[in-house]
Image 1: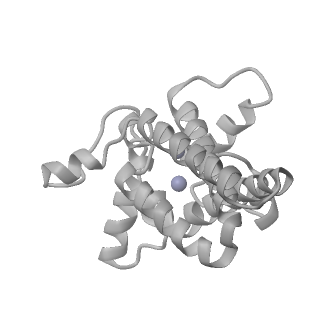
Image 2: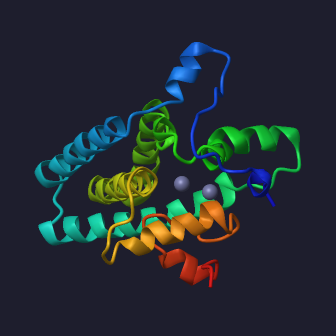
Image 3: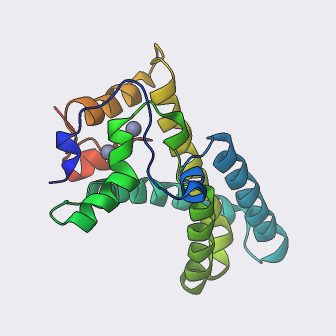
Length: 205
Ligand SMILES: [Zn+2]
Ligand SMILES: [Zn+2]
């Protein structure tokens, strides 16, 4: 059980997370920054995959989709087990609030809807180096798929909090994330898709 259950979501406002002004500034990101970075990063890797590896176009496309699907699983796991980590110690509570609780308290603060780019670029580059050891050249198409999944997640999450729900099939994404924020913080963890909530039985009835 994490402490988000006790947080009352505020319709307006924001919160200072760090005393240090540099850290505070880094904790706020305009959504266009990570989207641009990951578009360029993924395009670069795909270009490398096509021009510098012996992989066929079919393999490249297939690995891209494997990466995309892998991201949806990581999104679910990170949200469920890291962002909603149980907060029985003060250090955990502080980490949980900084990483995610603040978003539950101020869900409409648009400057805190994406991880700081410095952090996401570092993680992506570590992933590139680590996955290279496991996947070899496949990493150059797997990672673009994975990062595209991340960009899709960011876009969906941003739209869900910034805009009114559309009157079509995508409305379900607004409804699901609304349940997670306002009704049941211990379920409906998927943002970009409800797939893993169905798999792991955390979809609200
Ligand atoms: Zn959450
Ligand atoms: Zn949210």
